[in-house]
Length: 239
Ligand SMILES: [Fe+2]
Image (cartoon, rainbow, N blue to C red; front, top):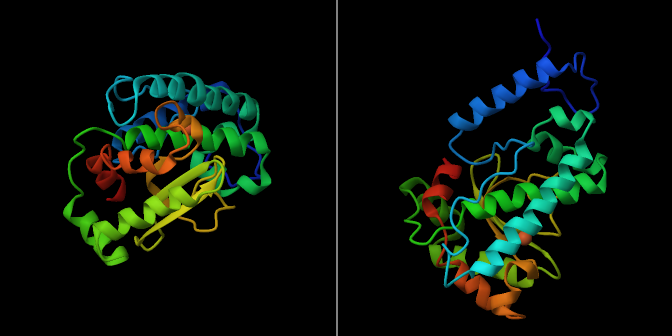
């Protein structure tokens, strides 16, 4: 029977033939179709932006979206694929890679994070993004007391992140929500994160995410971000 590639980091694949890799890719495609969230990602395919570049106007402008997706995100993807090419990381899930990130090259940490984080970010934005599900709303009230308090904590996490990074809403292994921020292209799935969990809402606070429209006014971008939150997608990720 063929050996599957769900190996712990450090293990050597016993059969690395193209045939088995193709089988694994097929398996990943099936998984991604059945997964509620967007957390399962084909590492070898640059994902499409789920809307037009101007879809988030006036909150996020068309030129920012075009450059951010087609240049920045694409470069992270290309550099990530180059960094894992021919290595055992090719057969690891993104989650496995992040869980072992402190043992992996900086190029994998920076570009793998950039690839994954932007995919989450595009998916959790939409104009008229609905409301949180009842289950998510209950979890927000349990963790923060109110939606207003979540908004405050999440916004503050973005505003106070020095330099470049991300703000996150994540769930921990008990299903409890928490807000955090990470530097550079790190995320809460990484072994190096101060607070570890599964991210369900991502906000990019790198200057490239807002500078063309908002210049140095990061708080204005963060305020605008609350108009493009795709609560339906975030609810699906939570559940
Ligand atoms: Fe970005």
